[in-house]
Length: 424
Ligand SMILES: Nc1nc2c(ncn2[C@@H]2O[C@H](COP(=O)(O)OP(=O)(O)OP(=O)(O)O)[C@@H](O)[C@H]2O)c(=O)[nH]1
Ligand SMILES: [Mg+2]
Image (tube, rainbow, N blue to C red; front, side):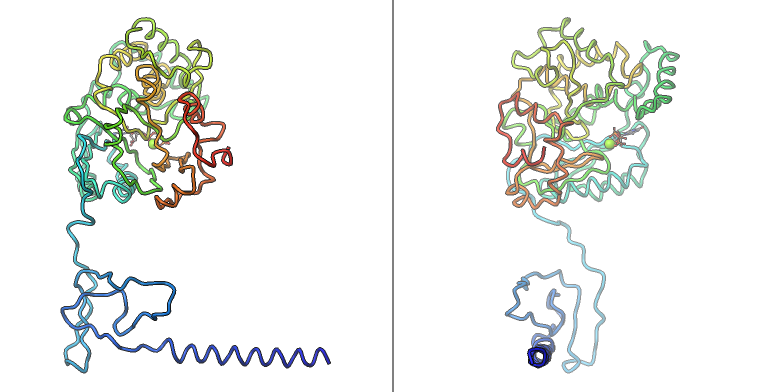
């Protein structure tokens, strides 16, 4: 008996369900042709004659209109039928510039012609998330002349002015005091030990250029602040204010989003050269420096912590100042860019930590960033939601053991963002 009545109940349920479906189809899905578009009206996201069901919970803003590209004329009104134009008109401006003053600042990219599509991706991200509203300039530098494709594509993507410069030969070559045989033997040894970029000459020129020369290029003389952008980076969140302006108004000279430990094999004697500089130029060392970020024993040894310089927003006048130039020249004379493989990240980081006051270095929690293989995804759900971030918080590197960002927070007595403990 129980089985029989159960079966009847199922039949009834199926019947009710079927009738509901038929009713729904017959009442809701038939086009009403209520609003024919005539020539001269704007194209709407609604298909002609289709009206948005008012009961729908997905509210479509039918005030969104594209520029006039389509005209559909009802056959009852005219014999003439026009084919919809599939080529939209191109707006001259994607969005209006943000109000307020601009800082004397530029984006800066060092790249080869072959980097074009990777840097195009980066530019697009920077423009979409920030610069389309601010229109800052962009300086491109190369050790060879940029080709037409590079210039054409980048000019079309950047909302500000673009500038293209070639690097002077003596900023991208071996200085005369370098022993070529010794440098070659080092490269061969690093190749055998499989040290990343260990056998590359061009990588060494790049690191030396980024350490000591980019800010001296004639194209950068006119600017006070720079924001470095590398190929194939990602920005995961909207940038809802002007970071250049933040830097200037808060007297910041250097900033970062990611920090980590350097491969010791690439910098075995960098700290010896640094200590030589400290001894020779005590007048350049800031009384309120960040030695605690670099060393766990008061400066005797280097703990390898550095800010990851493929992202940086900084002050060019600081890099052009005597303390920084004296620091770079001490290192350059010791030859470690070629006899080892010193990177510009530890060089900039040691300089910022020793020459600047603690409060002149800034950590941008709200600039969400990726450069292979590390991600900075802002800690704090509220921030991520408000900034429309698309990064996975689980990928955030900030509080992992191989990051030095916790050390930066502790040294500066900063309160870590809520939720950091869950990402360790
Ligand atoms: N003009 C020029 N630019 C270079 C050269 N080598 C590297 N660069 C640029 O210098 C910057 C750093 O080089 P990358 O190859 O990204 O070095 P990296 O970030 O340490 O390593 P990746 O993991 O490969 O990104 C990038 O903006 C490159 O486009 C070169 O030989 N000539
Ligand atoms: Mg890179």
